[in-house]
Amino acid sequence: MIYGGSEKSGFGAFATYLFSHNTRIAIFVFGLGVFACAPAILLTFYNGLILGAFLALHVDRGLGVDLAGWLSIHGVTEISAICIACGGGLQLGMAVLFPGDRSRSDALHHAGRDAVKLALVAALMLVAAAFLEAFARQMVQDLTARFVIGWGVGALWLAWFVFTGRRRR
Image (cartoon, rainbow, N blue to C red):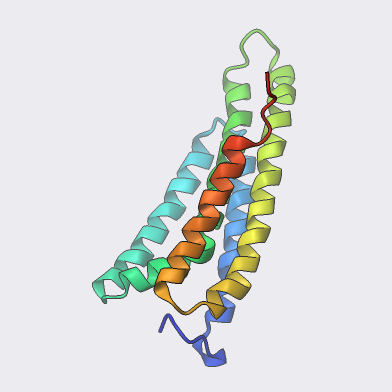
């Protein structure tokens, strides 16, 4: 049952598990990026495989679209945050692997400034996703509205990333 969250459904516990799991994954992929990049990429890919298997099970039972709507409200933001955290970790890993003309510690220090910004953005996105998961996902029962909210919030994140932080010339 995707709709009508009663206390007995277990979705509250599942939501708590998802948030804590995704927060751990974001921290892990960021931290593992410094170790030659590969562990961060593999962990991100592995979690994508788990999500794909979860979705495939629901598609086989005719609930694929319902699950996609249920996950869209918070998942667009959460999954994007994990990918951004991975990108920050990869930036650190690239500084270690390819320091260029700098020493490795200097390259790591220089890359760390941008990587920390990415980690902070990912943390902000995970907090926003937690609020979306706690409130909007339970209150909004209409499938179309769930898609509109989830992907609309995703579009707002994208607009923020594209249009802010640039200096005008």
